[in-house]
Image (cartoon, rainbow, N blue to C red; front, side):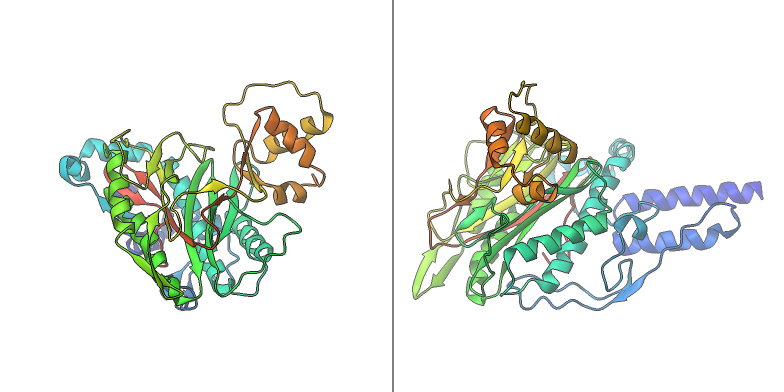
Length: 437
């Protein structure tokens, strides 16, 4: 019996190693099931994982958002109310899309030393994959109901509620990564409705849905464009192609300026016909992708979307949000409209505050968001309904940074596509990739 137990443990170790090498979600799931069947006599507690048959989700009302494929072994039910932690009790979360390194980094694919380095980082990878699976399931849910005629407040509140439900939100340990951006038309980013804003989603709108999920401070930052009128297909395809070009060019030792050049070339290969006029499509040159640190959505490095100086290099182990914006306007944004997004300054020094309400608001922000971004709606929901003057005081004291909406010229359209990637020692993993885009 002892020899049999040792042999079974060795086999389990082999299964785990093969799963980490990235044979894909389905393969990993099969291995897990085999392991559980074998383990009946081992004396340990075996987690029972229920699976469900989910039909294909039809996303045809949404321009260039692909259908979610039918699955016979999905761990989420049709009501989409099973938390991710319950679906994967063994923390065997699905891997993202694996892209192998090429050129001078091709050796990494088979390097034993690099594989061992990955094994030591498994716990960190589990957190980001859990956040990514929550993001995939949440956006599948939102794609099923987001239609013209809804108020933007209803759109984002249903999304945010589902995110908290699926990730089993627990303070700063896991929850929202940042406010749900749902910027419309010429507004490129950083807009979410404040309470009292009754904006309604229209058939001819172009909405950038940008939301984040974090587990243990590891943030998945992923966005896509929602449009219903097929006349926008080329400008949506432009940002989609730009992001995929950026992902392909990204990698260990890749230069930021060269990545930006590849993105620019992809976006500028498209044009759009609107109201009888053919307009060039261009990248928004003063918007960038960025590295992501623990509890820090903008980690310090920028990934441009236009060609420029070579600049910094990407490094092993880094997380990046590869995001691109395509515009038929000026391709240049300015701050405008009422601000909704804020974030505590990451390395803000201790500053004595004289105003009592400002002290209370800062305490609320630190307890609930830390250095993660937040919006005014969330402060209202926490009971801070008269926060405007206190918030202004925190901004004036350089403790909180405002992030106003970023707008191109009025009447133009901007699209966005974004994925989070992890530069693993052996490969590049597109953490947030799904069937939809």
